[in-house]
Length: 177
Image 1 (cartoon, rainbow, N blue to C red):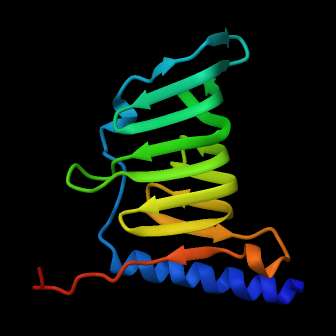
Image 2: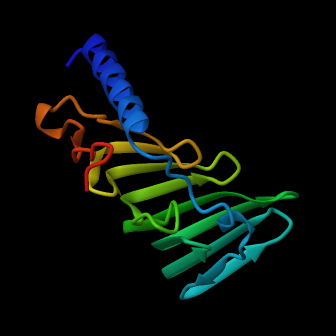
């Protein structure tokens, strides 16, 4: 696949993601999640307050409100404002968050997850998969803007068998059950 074809497919996927956004109800994380304490469990932990870095290793489980992350290792970066970034590595990392009390969990899987807390933006890389309701996205990299509910999926491969895969469920029409 040449560079122009890659750009074409990136544009098509972006348009598809925006189209899905227009069809689906707004799906933001529960507003109170960011105000909840972060609970962590791990086999070992190391904190460096001066550098603002905490590292948790071994069967790590992180919970904040409805958000849960399971990983082999989670590194948390903090500044004067609080937690700014979380990087999780695992085989795979497992991410779950409930957008609204009545909605199903949004689930993400990858070998690495980088979560920018301030921007409410998660990037899943290597064997990435995101499930929202019945919709599924797979690719080498998935970017998920949790605040705006925008999903972008990418393939970093020229192999046609490793392209982005999206499975979208039909939306119920107004007035139907």
